[in-house]
Structures are given as C-alpha cells and as structure tokens.
Length: 412
Image (cartoon, rainbow, N blue to C red; front, side, top):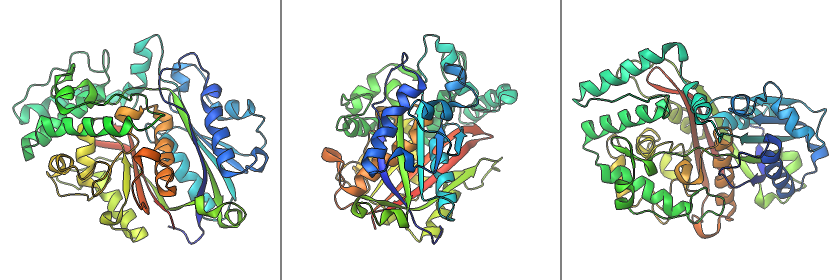
C-alpha cells in the first residue's frame, strides 16, 4: 500500500457471451469508450495503457501486439502500451501493474483493459487455451497426481477426455470438491447452493451471459460433467471486455470525486510448490493484504471472487477468512453470501453466470465492485457498501493456483 493515492475514475464493460465473429478490437472498443466517458477523460489524456489478453494468439492468431492493434483502431497511439497475459488473472495483473507505477508517481492517468475471445468453431482450439495454463511438460504427472489424490479418499477418477473433450481444470475442481466433501462433510446440496445463489445475482445483471435463475434441485439435476460437478457448477467460456480508467489524486480533484473509488492495495502473487500442510497461496496472500491495508475480512462489504467452479467459491470463503476451514458449505447455505446477507459474494453473478472471458475477468470483477461502492449497482446493490475485495486467480502449478491478484477498494 502506497502513500500516493490511486483511484478508479471510470469503468466500462460489454456483455459477455458468444461473439466469435467480432475481432479483438470490436470487443474491446466499447468497453474502453465507456470507461473514458464514465471518467470524463479524453483518450488524448491517457499516459499509459495496460492491455490484458490471454487467448487471442490461439483463437485468432493475434500475437505480440494485441494492445497496440486495439488502441490503433481507436486512434490511440504513441503512449506506452504494455501487453499482459497471466492466465485467468490477466487483467487483474494489468490493474496491479498500473497501480504499482501510479502509486509511485509515474503516471497520472492510465487505461486498464481486459478483452478476450474464447469461442471458436473448433472446440479443441478453445480447450488448448486451458490446457496451456498448466505445465504442459508435466501434464501426465499432473493427471497421475489427481488420480492418486482421488484414490487416497477412495474415489476413482475417470480422466478419459481430460484436456481433450473438456478442460483439465474440471478434473482439478472435481478433485477439490471430493476432498472437501471427504474431509469436512460438505454436501452436494451446499456446492449446488453456490450456483443457485450466483444465478439469482446474475439474473439482476444486464451484462451477464446467463440470466435464468436456478434452484438447488435444478443445479443437481443438470448434466453431469465430472462427478460431483454438474454443468451449472462450472464457469462457461465467453467473449467480451471490461475497462477501467485510473487517475492520481491530482487528476481526481478536477473530476467528480464522489464517484472515484480508491485502490487501497493490489497485490500479485505467483504460485510455487506448496508443501504438504503448508497454508494455501490464497490464504497467505489474503493475510498479507489484510495486514498491509489494515482491513479485517469482517469489514468487507462485498467480494468478487474467482468461482471458476462452485467448489472454488466455497474454498475461497475459507482462504479469505470469511469462515473457518470446512465451514464454507454452511456459510453459503446460511444465506450470508447472498444479496441481503452479511457478506454478499459475486453480486455480478460471478464467473459461473456473468461468464469467464479469461483476459477480461479480473477487470470485470473490479467494474462490479466499483459500481457497488458508488451505489450504482441497481437491483443488486449492496446497502452502504464501503470496502470491497476482488480475488482473481489463474493457472495451476503444483497443487495450487499459478497466478493470483488480490485487490481491495475503498469508497473513502
């Protein structure tokens, strides 16, 4: 946390969904234009742009300079353009990098944009994006490790099709679910309650990919992907974009300061080989950012977290200190993480309902939290929201996340 204040002055976002005929520029431009307009900043005032895209090289062949290509289509050039790819934490990393330099006085106005294409007529090309978010040289070792972990809890894992007809991450999440159920008695109904909750939140979000509401029974009776996970328990792919305009205190003074939301801190952590019994990476990172900002998890008004699967959300409740280990299922079952509850989580609908265009996800979380802290979230508004946290992780390394960004925002 720096003494030099940095604020989110403008946000913009497109709907998420299947826009496979759109170019990267066509996806990103509306979000960037909306963020600039929202901030009251002209594009000519931008001093730097952090452009986050993860899959463009694979899906449409745009390598090396995607950010420059997008911005050129809008008449923006000359300024430094930093292209960032960091798995599902791509645009959260873009925000963290922008914040880090701005908090040291390097820039007064910065653009952060996450934009993504994942839909393709060839599904294997889309699956290959996710397959590349692990150590590809160790894929066989990873699968063997998952099999061994499931065998240890007396549950065989059928890995046929893993990484081919489905993302290998589904098998990873299914293993997390089985282990949580085995250790703590978490039920399938509690896991399904996450999906049902997020469907109700997503139905209130006009930009969500899915707007239908689901009951727990609907989730449990849906198509099985890998036991115990059904389709609504897994985040879909998506195309779309989200953008933010960051400003310094000096620029904030000439804007509508009541709508500027302060970035208290944004911290990037990379995965390592977590030893057996060692504290999970997310929990370690959460402890550090709470200490840095002086924020207690009980002080948070709302949270956007990386619910790539329903069990992910339950685990992250525990890692972020919202409840004790093994209590995540009970927390969602109690209604505490629903709108109107003690600590609403994923008011946007989360990845499972809003959608998960990899490169855009982190920025989209911050768009939602900015709207919440401004009091502009409409039917999904959290009352008197003052502090918010975004948790955005991506990739898989060893037995844990490979890239992780935690960001805390404040209304004051």
